[in-house]
Length: 457
Length: 93
Image (cartoon, rainbow over all chains, first blue to last red):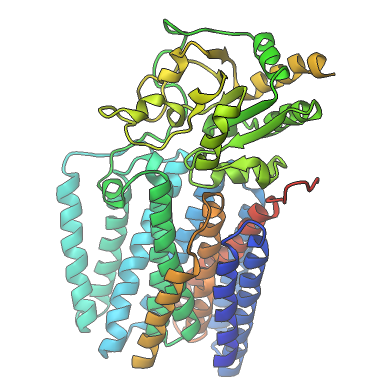
């Protein structure tokens, strides 16, 4: 049994390691899945050998069937743009399951080696369950994406913290029985809600990643409670690597974890926040003007933003790219770490439209290419291109940006002059070499393709 | 107990080392992959389910098994869907 669990653990570690590079990532996930099948099969053998009550078998079988079908269906049906909230939902149920394992096991134990991990498991598991559900709701738009703060937020959070830690202490000390555990679970659930509500939608990806690491830790605690090594190993592995990933994501977004948890940045709601319409000093151009610039360029850099994904315009973008490439124009995508809903999300969305990853440039590579580019085509991206970030004293100061203004010409495809998350004017739009092409991302790209066609055909 | 604590701590250290320099391209799939791995809590849910012998126990076991199965099945499928789309330069569908 232990040997089989060891084999599964090796698969998890090697699988995660293979995810360091795009070329081997899929194999890594498959290896990890093979490890999972092994671990579950070994557990099934153990369960069959130990025998069980009829009711236990029915509960287990029904639960497995319902969960597996729900997971399979949602994973297959989800649109790639809605993927972050689905991962958050899966994380929520994982945390919930970890907490329930300890809830079931606890009755009658008084040894510290069981009660302490039980308290931690229920505490962390309930927080991640509630927190991930709220995060998922914010990303989906079911819960307002803006930071939700009501009078007495801090007091409520503080009270919940006190109750949660107090009940946790009782459980860890092995006193208070079922009542203490119930109070702990409820207070931790409330704390999870209160923790995520005040955090803005723009920071949600980092929160989801953090809660993911927490679930890993809760699973490891569940492993300590029931004395199961594969839970301990896999849970600790996810807990630690998830913490590293959270740090990498926060760095990529130029946000510190502390300022994220304090909350209040970013609405997460896409779309213009101010009145639309061209403002003074902006040069508006037509699809034909833009097409001439594109058709006679030798190097074009496309800067996609969430607006492109929200309009489902990835395929329209790739159609335009194919057209330009057929005319021997070099085209690359410049992808800012926060171009999608979370770091790497835009890469997934473009990959879905059959863009090879070799054509996607990360921030530093892209900035080296802009000075050589004849045209930079910005589609649905805003704050990540704002040159104001290079100066101190405004909402985007210090944020790493794509140096779009280094290109010879800039075309911005955008629905209106609306602001981005940061809520400030983008100085790129008033730059003399920038032409604004006002259109929906999908319709605009299709119009560009149609206008470029006769030039390159 | 000491043995299990040792395993826990060593696994934490492995987790810190195993993903060192992941490109931002892979942050989303990696998070999803790690999310699928903690679905191993399904093993725990199975082990407690068979010891249940009253109505509350059955209910807990059912919910725990359903949650964990959703986590593990959905997690791996959605990660694979994402990674399947990452193609090498030059590959055409």
